[in-house]
Image 1 (cartoon, helix red, strand yellow):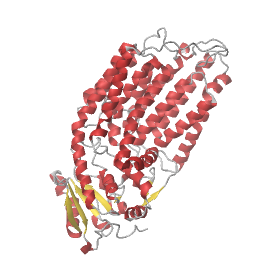
Image 2 (cartoon, helix red, strand yellow; image 1 turned 180 degrees about the vertical axis):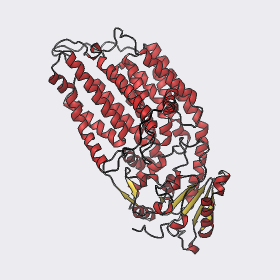
Image 3 (cartoon, one colour; image 1 turned 120 degrees about the vertical axis):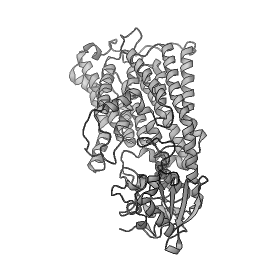
Image 4 (cartoon, one colour; image 1 turned 45 degrees about the vertical axis):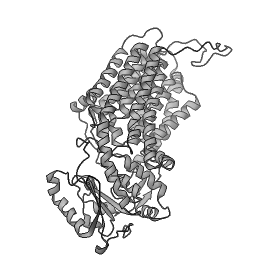
Length: 586
């Protein structure tokens, strides 16, 4: 351990990565042509990126669970208060809050992209950026350890179309990209910090924090761990303690302070995750990680074998990195120690952490599952195999990710047809309407609870298309998003019969439709004809059907009958012309 922590010896007076004073640069010789293994790995990586982007080209919209709600949030920011019925109804039902919080970066990026490419095009640009960003950020991190290991960026491809991406957790993925960029910078600073690099680290940490809190914790913790191990190694190598700490640890501590202060302020508001949940080791969760079920499998295709292949390749590469250093390997003793400690620590946290801290802070294990594979990749980069073995590994990683993406295409095609049926009803909804979608059956592509349902929040895209308010806009009921329903009580609170406001998202929905009579302009009943008989016979379903028959008029049905649109009946005091009949009270 002592030898691992000791810095690599260098000539006295020579600043690493810089040419010594008075020494001229070597003349440029003929540029070397890339080797055949490098060409193979590069072509495979490029093709892998193209395959991951195929759904964005083949289908009219991005297919994810939460993506439409994020698009709607940005759209509301852009159009609330505009002239006309749409701007008026948005201003009536929403309020905006741009106070810095985690979970805001995706909204801000979409707010910039939507005017350029429209709501659907803007979301596609964002998702394409996530794919390219993951690959590029991981490439930067592995090249900070060994420039020859760039091909390990192929390990980002299985994550680019994985479980949480299908859920539409755009902020989390942006946070992971930010964390990888932080690691790329920190791993390069083996010989200490200068002010520009430390300032860049502080900026990257703030950017990561603005996307998601968990990747920020990972990034800040990794930076501090590397700083501590490097400072310890420098002391063991003979440097005085103050010099070693000032060179390696103090700049990192100072760089972490701005984002740490933001975190403290956010938690002090009471809007952050509560300290709930008990630590409990889970062999099931560990098995999901070892087999690749988490984080890679969406449930939309035959992805288990590609996921397992990805895990096997990463495990073999990590095991190969346990060998002794060969001539030409970079001197990465402190980095290997820090990455090894981080890998063990993060895996233990994943194994022990509860799946959720509260109803609003879930998917903890699913999010934590991203970090052990990424740390395995970085560990492998400390002693990467030779060019031929590297090219073979890159091809296998690309093949696994591409196979998973291709097996998802039939399910995505079916989901795209369902989404198109729902969105076809938008032309029958007047601008300025308040809209509720009651879903009685999951999408045909979703195996069940725990897997993304691309129909779940398409109500938000429907509202964007129609120019109205989605009463089920899930972002607008949480304090950590930038647009929120104005109230209380607001329309969603009155409609949702669950005190935790989860009733509208249940199957069958638990709603009190008479409570919003006179204020709700349009209701879409989704999937009732194909729902389970118990769902159709439920008392709540019968109550909804009776209310619709008495106070709404059926005006349109989607081509296959999946969605049925009801609009408020003027004869019963409703407003079929669009726009809320009454402002929210309170």
